[in-house]
Length: 525
Image (cartoon, rainbow, N blue to C red; front, side, top):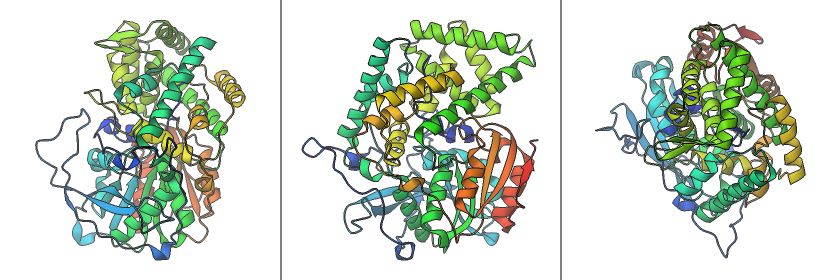
């Protein structure tokens, strides 16, 4: 059974607005192009500029001309409520006067300007999700906050329009995203490794000059320049999933610049790749089992099986059949790997569980269209066959954020261990890709300590598949200034889950500055 945690599932835009990850082609990654003398150009991934030296670069705002709808269509005219611009930042912070890249920014101005607090900057997850495209789709989900704040987001460096990383052409991406990543025999394991090697080699060839500089530490420095450009003395921030790591790194680097910070669906940046892979396998297995039990509560409506045990057997039978013989969908094939990705995509939110039941039942009847569409949304594959930078940016940022480069024996052992936890979601995670990555990484983004910052609200969900709850209290503790709120519910991310308790606490903190009492538990509603 292929692992779908190849690109560890922390892309929150899909749980924010299911189709938002697929929206927008986002940049051409021109800055990253090329190798020098056949070698990737090395460089520092750690900025040296202190917070007090952040220059205030002006942003010229204008219409958002290149926003695409989730299906890839371009609106007949730009949304008048949205404005876009760019912010110049150094490619290499060790050379602040050297080459620059443009960071793409979007804002939706406060609807009650007379009571405007300032700007609220969002990162919706990834790493690799386009903040510009996601904000364009998701702004209406934050109407309460938008009444008092300009809602702002951006494509982090290496993503989308901000010198987005590209890893080869569409054919390379198709082979990489569709491969069965946990093969049944050694020959298939070899083919998967060769496909991964092709992908990694393409990343170096297409975006090699950019790869050393796309880490989270540099993105945090970019975010402080964005704060200054917005005219804010302190940064008010809402980070979801990977956005919590970016926010934690920012708070560590610039504690005196922290305003009102919310970190929803938190990562623990300090854990090893092996631990992260194991915890996420457990998290997705838990969500999968919760989905099966929920489906079986209505046996007449649950199309994949009369009870959870039968439903699981039917799903595993489907996946094994796809491993042997992919299902034809138009001119394409639904592989076991793509089907697994589609399942993971729908597990991000309880709201999409009925769709998952339908997708699986149709695939069992030889119709794989819904599963393939879910997978395409998750992978950033557009209707025309092109890809956003999502699945290229993800490993580029992840691998430069760690010094770990696991050996084959370690990867095989991890695969065996996670399979015992989850036959559906077990695998080696990001370890295989990072073991081949063409540039070294470092651990600066894993070191968290925000001593001296304002209180930071950390919200963890007990049923979160992608960022399991155990990471929430760990991150709150590592920050030293974290205030933990527990959400007892399913899905990735708490604020948009529909829970009134979480929303009330978060809005009161961001709008009125009211810090919740420690240890609050929202029981779900």
